[in-house]
Amino acid sequence: MSESKPLTIWIVSGEESGDQLGAKLMRSLKARLGAERLRFGGVGGHAMAKEGLNSLFPLEDIAVMGISAVIARLPAILKRIRMTADAVVAAKPDMLVIIDSPDFTHRVAKAVRRRAPQIPIVDYVSPSVWAWRPGRAPKMRAYVDHLLALLPFEPEAHRRLGGPPTTYVGHPLIERLDEIRPAPGDRQHVAGRPLNLLVLPGSRGSEVSRLMEPFGAALALLRERSPHPFTVTIPAVSHLADEIRTRAENWSVKPRIVEGEAAKWAAFRQADAALAASGTVTLELGLSGVPMVVAYRVSKIEEVLKYLIKAPSIVLTNLVLGENVIPELIQWDCTPEKLADSLLPLLGDTPERQRQIDAFRKLDDLMRIGDEAPSERAARIVEEMLSSKGKA
Image (cartoon, rainbow, N blue to C red; front, side):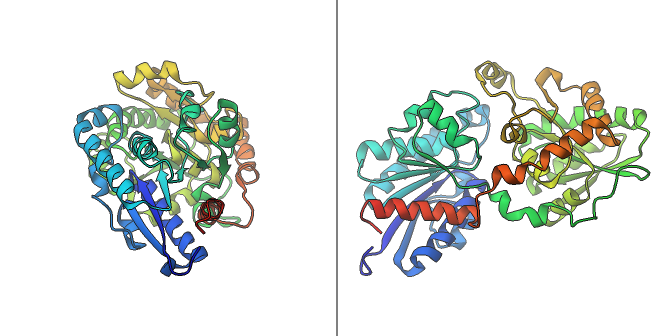
């Protein structure tokens, strides 16, 4: 890259997790290429702003989850898609990086590819083509030049489905194992002491509203059936903490509710078992070595879509392991009775508990990427792509 001409990279994210990934990517790119030689534009939140991004608009304008919420906000989201694509085309960046949130970012990428096909486009975080709508994979080749995957099985999934060239760059959780895991000897044997049970009802309001009632009833049944006394901790995301407290008021088993990342990881390190909503938290628990039961409920509209799901599991840890070691209770199976029945063996020294613990020990090897941090590997691939285009 010429010393006199700065390199312009646009990064477009659609929600907080993408903002965090974008910020780390920006930091790693500055370390590799020099902060003074880079110019950033795009859409992001507070984390990317700290790295120097002046976002086109607040991330909250588009950070909506779930089909019903997207439909309700559709006109505003479509306006933001057009605005973002217009800005990218006008800026003529050396590269566009889209991060997760495919309902927003992929529409931006398609519009940019139609109007400015010379701009290389990298997609950071694969959509779940391996779970449902696999036809998206080959369609992505038209507007994604390279895909950076967070999960180790995704490159093979895209190769099989005809998706774009894909590289596994590692999950950001790999960088946080010291926070997630107890120190050697800290997690005691489960026999002969009160146990610590984590309850994780989700990070979205819709998840909390659907899962808190069956979770509370399951804990009541578990207390009746388990010979082992236990306490319950709920690590709550800040914007849902009050709702979780309100919904837990009627629980017969009173939980301790903690907020903030430090308190969350402390609870993980002390946990003996967990009841969790499906999502990234299942990978967090697996890497921490916490046996779990996973549950999920969706709206009636979303329930129809389950018939399109092709994956053998909805639990990320199961998918990474390639075997369904974690019980998953979805929709009509998500009942207090079934949740309690599945949790009970995890509160003792049982084959069910040991099977999960043994399986979790394989995760490090399956997710290893060498000496690079995930954001560093992602930045290296971006730099290599720019070099191949004669831009770096």
